[in-house]
Each structure stands twice: as C-alpha cells, then as structure tokens.
Length: 399
Image (cartoon, rainbow, N blue to C red; front, side, top):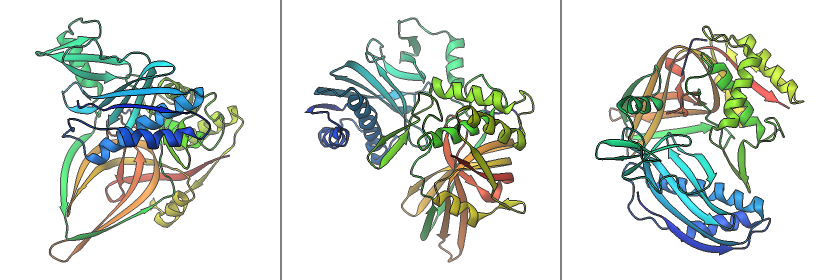
C-alpha cells in the first residue's frame, strides 16, 4: 500500500416521561415540535430533516440511559468550514442533566461529529461560527479568525486550518448524466455503516488500518465488545446509525496499525492485513474468516451481491481508483468524482447498478459499490468498478 490520506434556528420545548420505550416516543414528539427559520440554501430539505433526526437519536439515547424525566429545550444554528462554506449545524440543549451540545456535519451525508456535555462552544464567539475540527472552534468576522478565548489567529494558523479538511492527493472533477429515464438497483441488506477516515498527521500509509477499523466498527454492533467498553452504533427500535469518528476509534486504528505491522513507507500487503485482523480479533475473544470475491481479475458481481444481502462487508484492495458522490435531480445525475493514482484499501457495503436511457435512445450502465473511502471529506461514496483496478477482494466474517 502506498502512503495515503494521509443559521437558522430551531427551538423546541417539551416534556416526556423517560422509560424503557421512551426514546421512540421522544423522537416522534420532538420531530412534531421542531420548526425551522432561515433554511440553509446549500442543503436539501432531506438533509435538513436527517440532521434533526440524528440529533434526536443521539440526545434521545443519552436521556434514555440516564432514565430522566423533565423539560428539554434545543437551539440550532448553522456552522461553517474555514472556507466559509455551510458545513452543518450545532444544536445546544438543556435537559435534566444540564447543558450539552451536538455537532452534525453535512458531508456526503449528515453525520454526528460530536455530542458533548457543556455549554454551546460558540456562545462567546463573534461572527460566523467556524468548525475547524473535533473540539476545535473559531469565529470569523471582518476578515479575521478568532479562537474561543478571543485571540486573533495568525495567517499561519489560518493556512493550517484551510488544510485540515482537504482530500489529500485526490483529483476532483464533475460530470452530468442527462437522461430520459433510469433504473436504479441497489443490492444490500446493510442499512448503515461507519465512515472512518485517516487521522490527521498520524498513521502514515495507514489505509489498511483504517479499512480494518471500518470492518471492526461495523461488526461491533453485531459482536459484543469487539471494541471493548464502547458501542460503535446507536440502535433505536429497528434502526441504527454509527457514531462519528472519535478518540476511541483513532485508538482502535492505532492498535490495528500495530497488529497489521504497517510500514510507514510501503504500507501493508493483503496477507499482513488478514494476519493483523486475526490477531486483533483473537485479542477480543472472537474469530474472523475470509473468503475471496474475485472472478479472475475482476470482482465477482453476483457473489458480492449475495454477500451484501447477507449483511457482510467486503474489503477491496485497489490500484488506481475513482469514487464519486451522486446528486440526483429531475432527469439529471451529477457525479462529483475523486481520482487517486496509488494503491488503497477500502471497505464495500453495497452494490448499485444504474441504467440510464439517453435522449438518443441508447443506454449506459454504471456499476458501483458503496464504500467507506478512508478520506475525511468524502467518507462514504461510490467506487466506479469500470475505472478501478481491483487487485483483491474478500468478504470478512467475524463471529
């Protein structure tokens, strides 16, 4: 493996009795009472609704665990990245335990970045609230960035901030498919999956450790204590969502980096990846098996479909790759494509085949797999099978 990778307001007031079944009731009640003022132009209504849903789930879980009954108030406002683009929302709230806040980012899809006990981190900041990184906040006004304590940032610090959210050595492009009609077939029973990414300035050439962490994080929902003393996913009823990357996940990656024996210059081979994952699983009292998903030099599409329908992930080792996010509008799909030249390891969770019928009567087919990319700014995307060389692919089963 080569070196890689390296607002508006919502206010609500309600009272609920928190008992064993109360989180579902809590969520339904809060949704019914939320209202939005000042819609974010950069986000769709679906994304805005998903942000609110994630907030409800995250805070609802906290209330349920504490078994509290009482009044709950929430305030929502827009946050921005260091390039002053709309990035997501901070929700500050008060419940029976005191004050807290949650940060929801709208990346490839909305994700929970933080949920913290304490005051709104932007309460004393002037100007636009800037989200630099986890637990790092700033304000922007009159051409200046400031820390939470009011100290003005230097030019070097601002330059550093502008590099935090980059996508490394990826080349970006955009294309549009205009069509008369399309069929869109997704094959998977996996409803959600983690999107962990390469930590900033650590674990050089560590994409195999990041891929292994995405596998472990996914299975942690199904295998108790695969990540000791930590639950990677939040489950409410029949739905679940994965927590965003945090210090526990970075520690997991660091542990896996050691188990795999990643070389800081050359990365790790498939055999070292499997050896390291076996070692980690053995340390947690679990067993892992692997089975190939290649047909000659290509991915076995039919076999992969059956694996995803059985809710199991597939690890892909690729050489030269393209992955994309897809924005669908009426009779037009926009592909924002990211291209990398080196070798890389990713984890796949879904097959997707889109067949477009064009204005001239011809058809074109895109075969894609949904992956955890290992890149922060585009943590989940679709890998284009026609423009990516896959050197190995195998299903991972942890028991």
